[in-house]
Image (cartoon, rainbow, N blue to C red; front, side):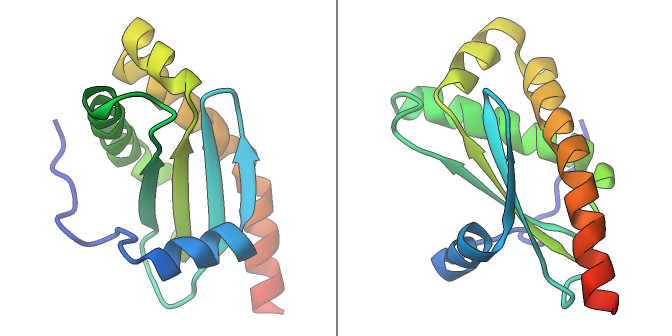
Length: 129
């Protein structure tokens, strides 16, 4: 198991989440929604997780959050630096977590990251110009 970044690389304040939701770009699949927003002041991507009560009770939500944290840490090198990212869990992710565990959640997240890459590159080009 890889050690996670303690406190760094995380979105923590609701204002940061709101900015990513309102001004960022989104990609979605059946299990997750990935919001990205360019932030040139950060070198590494900052990631926030959102798991609502629609996913399930506290035990189920915490299980999904643990799996998402592990999936994010294992796919962190695929995320481009200079972005704030929010991962929102949809209710279907609980079934995926129960059926396939970490590998299923990682696959769903990797799919979204690959889908979001062209959008991120376009944002970086606009910032550079």
